[in-house]
Image 1: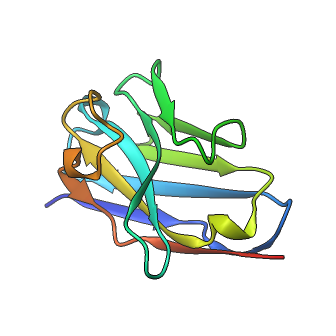
Image 2 (image 1 turned 180 degrees about the vertical axis):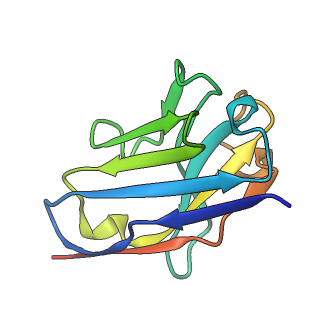
Image 3 (image 1 turned 135 degrees about the horizontal axis):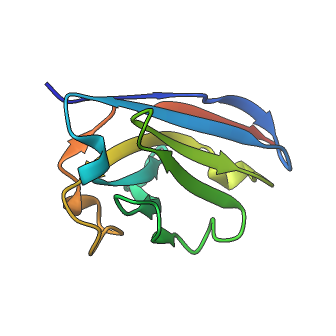
Length: 124
């Protein structure tokens, strides 16, 4: 049974930093591309960042490029999202997801498994 468990969310002031983690189990983590997507109230789920199985390829959404960094530790079966210079518009539930391939990783339909999400709230 695949489990993706996010942690690290919370309340942060604008301009601050936060680091999200996603612990994976029940799948061969190093065989999957991984992504972070987010959903704000009343909005569609939005692509944030993706990373290929080895960590050598990364993609970012336009709104987070240059501020967020995705990384992974295959030895620990863990995915990370370092969020710097956060803005109130980054407020959302952040989801970790696994995909069998890296191509088209910006599409939420690409992902096979999802975590339950962690809330990030940025105050102005």
